[in-house]
Amino acid sequence: MRIGQLAQLAGVETQTIRFYEQQGLLPPPDRQDNGYRVYTEKHGEGLAFIRRCRILGLSLAEIHELQSYQDDPHQPCTAVNALLDDHISHVRSQITALQALEKQLVSLRASCNDDREVEACGVLAGISEGNMHQQ
Amino acid sequence: MRIGQLAQLAGVETQTIRFYEQQGLLPPPDRQDNGYRVYTEKHGEGLAFIRRCRILGLSLAEIHELQSYQDDPHQPCTAVNALLDDHISHVRSQITALQALEKQLVSLRASCNDDREVEACGVLAGISEGNMHQQ
DNA sequence: TAAAACTATAAAGCTACTATAAGGTCAATA
DNA sequence: TATTGACCTTATAGTAGCTTTATAGTTTTA
Image (tube, helix red, strand yellow):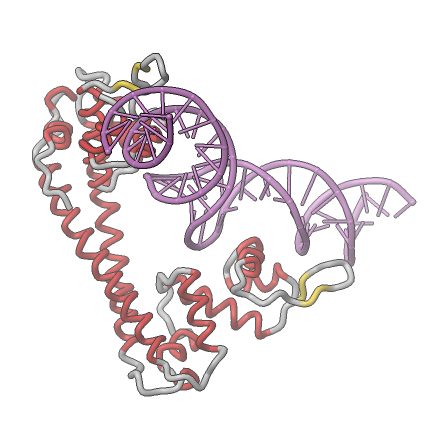
């Protein structure tokens, strides 16, 4: 299988595949005489794993870490679970921060209607006056 | 006021101030004979405005847009309100996406306890098997 | 006087790609 | 046979919003 076909199967661009190879997330495949990369099913599985991790919001570094665990299959999987727990709490704190931000934005927005001049705009005044709850 | 003092007042690094100047968000200040930047209170207010916008999650491009409205104070402020409305809906969709992600991660995490070998880890299996709801 | 603390510019690094440039390879077509 | 089009190659730059590093000049302090 050549890179274009693999890309289509995985739903990514060919450059992304080369990028993952360069980052050490996908093993370098064999090459044809003309230099074209030749992929096997293993590569397909590896790429699918990476993509699913990315959809879950894991960083390339975290994916790398997971791969290193997979390479040593008789370890306890404590570290895998810990990685996920960390990621979950990271996601939760993002949600909390965004919810606080939303509140702030909505209250700012409520301080103006559209029928004013910029000079008297409640939104701009709200930002400029800086009675914001930091953090 | 020199750059270090302004930075301390605003709670940013000096490089950040130079960066904003380079990006056209802060007007270039006068210079002393030795080339040192000299800031006025106006710069302090401008920088404070930028930082509050950043805390609200606005991009530098959006801040630039707001500044352009401020430069023309007798326009109606419709565009300002629209910018904020867009930003609010952006934040809301981020929250929604993260909440869906959290659900997915929690259910994945529930598929494993720490007392297994990596080979049998429910989390890794869950990612690999790919019965994930895309999007 | 010498070190510490400040300032300056320029360039690279960070994340996870995406895009562009310039070119080599291959199969099918005119 | 010449050429078109689709594919492949590498290398480099761009994205956002800074942060870090390198190198060097200036001012303040001990």
